[in-house]
Every structure is written in structure tokens, then in C-alpha cells.
Image: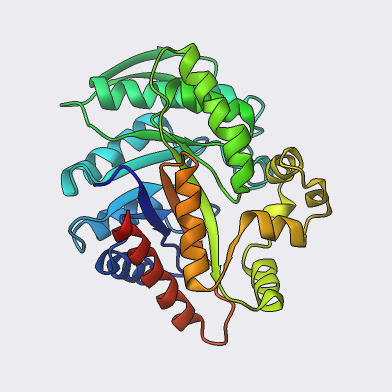
Length: 316
């Protein structure tokens, strides 16, 4: 698998829809498929277990599995299944998710999200990579062993400098979400390097989530983003990220034209493809693409996006 990768967020309204997207992405030549576990939506690791026996080489990634509802030993149990079904094809991405969701659904307060994430990563990486863990922390207790170590990268979500530094220090990679490319270049990557330098280790990869809308119609693109990605500006973590990137208007809980231009790759297919390659050339290791459909035929838009991802992937 090449160092630089192109992947697709394969979320769909139902399991068969996600599996179909993964099969189509693999056939087109995309390197990776990603799934998010959130709210009461479908569980990503369970879906990947089904995809493992329906695909041959596409790499899987969770972006993300929330830490609070799932003890790291339980996550390790699931990872072992995926590693046996699809050896070398899973990357596990974890993160604390968002305070409003965790509080309203589960009653978790997220008092120490970075501490929680740090301990989760330490437990998972020890158990999976070394085969055993003995840990007593502020957020977790974990004493367990597995039959053999599992070579699955354990990555983490990141939005602010502190989480990127943490990823640079102890994770196997960082996963961004709806973040402007310049923010990733000027804030995320330097923070990861600081973290890795402090730990005297090589800087791990940055996987950059990027919405892609193949359309020359600015009004249609704007409407599609407002409809399909409406939740992000409403969440405090994202508002703070955009403010740090120079877009304080995110506090208005909607997408501004400036936020769309900085965050969403738009234009015709050739233009979008060029912008994707330019992002990788910044030092980003992988693009995690969420297709945004703006035309009258969403299925055709999706097919065009999948085709473009395969084309760019094969050019790397």
C-alpha cells in the first residue's frame, strides 16, 4: 500500500448501503474505507467484519469509535476479530466524541477528555501491541492479556493543538474532521511534530477528513453543504477549531462562504483532484473523503466522486 492514501467515508443509511460503497470504492481503486460510530448509528467495527469477507484489499479505518461508552479492553476484543478476518487491513481510530452527545445520550460529563483519550490510547496500544496491560489511571483500570499481539495502528481524533500534540506523542496517527487545509498545515502538523519531538519518536501520519463536492454551481454547493454537513458548526469543539483557523463566525452555528471555501474541495473533477493532491503534498498522509452531492442525481454524483477517488489514488 502506498504511503499516501485516498479513502472514502462509507457511511450510508443502512448496512447494505455501506457495504455497497466499500465494494464500489475498492473496485474503483480507492485505498481505504472509513466509518464513524456515533449516536445510535450503526457500529463501524461490526460493519467492517462484514466488509472483510466481501472485499479483498481495501483498508478499513474507524473515524472514530467513541471512548466513553466502550472500555478499551472491549475495543481490543473487537479488533482481534477484524485482524483475524482481514489481517493488516484495520486502523482503529478512537476519540472522546462531543460533550453534548455524550452527556445527553449516556450521561458522561467529559470532565477530562484529553486525560481520557491518553489513558485509552495507552491501554489499547499496550494490550494490542505488547499482548498485555496493567494500568490504573484516573479514568480507566485495565488488567488483561490476549493470546498474541495484534499489529493494528491505534489512532485518535484531533481538532485542537492539544489533541494533535497528544497524537504526536503517543498515538499511531491523528484523524482530523472538517478542518481547513491551512489549519492542518499551520497548526495540526506542527503540533504533532512538537508531540513526537518531546517523545523522541517519529511523527505519526495525519489523516485529513475532507468534504468533496464535484460541482461548478456555487449556490448548489452552498445549499448541499448546509444541508448535508449542518451539524458541525453547531458543536462547540468545531466552533473553536474554526475560530482558531480564522473563522470566528462558526459561532453563528452555520456554514459561512469562507468556511466552505476553506474546508470543502469544490469545482469540476479535475480541479478537485488537483486540490486533493495539493493537500497530500502539504505533508498529510491520507485523505478521508466525505462525498457531498449537489446535483439533481445524487447517485450519479456519488459515482463520479468514487471514480475520482480511484483515479487520484492510482496516480499516487
